[in-house]
Structures are given as C-alpha cells and as structure tokens.
Image 1 (tube, one colour):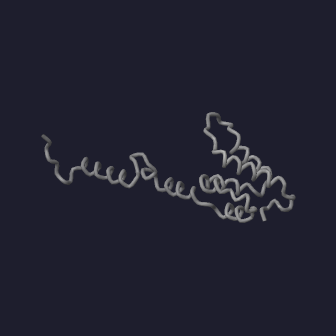
Image 2: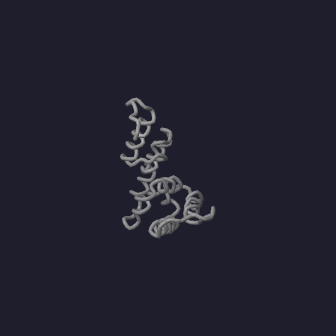
Image 3: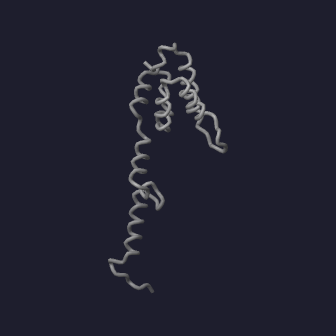
Length: 133
C-alpha cells in the first residue's frame, strides 16, 4: 500500500517533468539537457551557410551533392568554406575521406562518391574558374 504524496512533492514534479520530456522525444540525456549555446550550435549545424548555397548553385546539375547536403550539411559548409583555396580544399577533402584517427565508421558510399566527384571537378577547373562561379 502506497502513501499518497502531496501535490507539491519535488520528486513527483521531477518525475512528471521527465515523463513530459520523454513524451516530446527527449530522453534524460538529450540535447534539451544541454546548455542553450549547445542547442543553438546543434540546430545551426543542420543549416547550409551562404558559402555552401553559393557552391551548390555554381555546380553543374550532375554534381549537386544531394546526399552530402541532406545528411551532412555541416560538412558541406566546411567544404564550401575551403573551396576558394586549393590547398585548404584538398586538406578538407582528405580529412573527410581518410581516417587518420582510427576506428571511425566512415561515410556512406554515396557521400564518398560525391566528395570524390567534387574533388575531380574542382581539379579539372581552369585556375581562374576555381572560385566556383
């Protein structure tokens, strides 16, 4: 037999708050438990920046990086930020394709294919046209 608890019991309030968070799809250790800057940063990682949008608009239709922009927009932002500097671009692509830290799962084949095609496309551009326009 349980003893009824008063309505202002802190344990009951904490349990009710946890149940509400789980019902909204947030577990006890979910992003909503993080600080506000971490939640904002996480939300912004799913948005394409102006450089990524400009790069996508400049690419030929067969090279629109559909999988990369859909599944890894943060990485597309990184690639686009390095687009104008050939050394930086190559280093960025290498860091994504080559596992230097060990034990990484790696990207799906479609993403690797898009990154490889993008590298080939950029290397084939005349030096003046490498600005992505």
